[in-house]
Length: 167
Ligand code: ADP
Image (tube, rainbow, N blue to C red; front, side, top):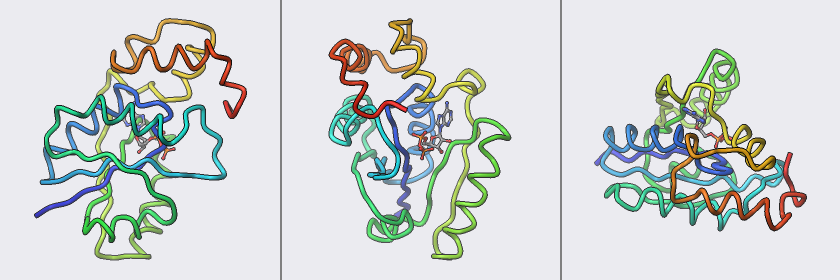
């Protein structure tokens, strides 16, 4: 059985992430989409909120499970018996950073490989930070995020919760 993990912040999940989730889920028997609990990185949504949004948008993909983890990604992968880490690549700017992480992870555990999926050109410019920025000005984000999470995002800014950690 092939098991993969797709780790990230997903703050919030975008259509770019969802595209990678769908494609990665076709390549393995089981895919864990995993929210990294990163204490150093401030986030707009709590881990629970991010999990909830991811669960709702992936509920029809039968082999996907949503979880969170802290600590090393390779340790989490090992725990899940996964031998593949999926990451998305949007542009050359992602490359150097991702290369470093993938090489480090491979050093830490040679049994685990990182597989990069190249973004769908439609989402090449899309990031969670762009979504947060546009939504903070009440701009239209329907082309960028799954419909199921639109309200969560607008509500977050309406409530003025953004000051808790918005970068
Ligand atoms: P991180 O903070 O770990 O980079 P993100 O939630 O920003 O977490 O991204 C998770 C993964 O999804 C990363 O591999 C990132 O490159 C990828 N990704 C983000 N946005 C897109 C997109 N629009 N198209 C393809 N991959 C993407």
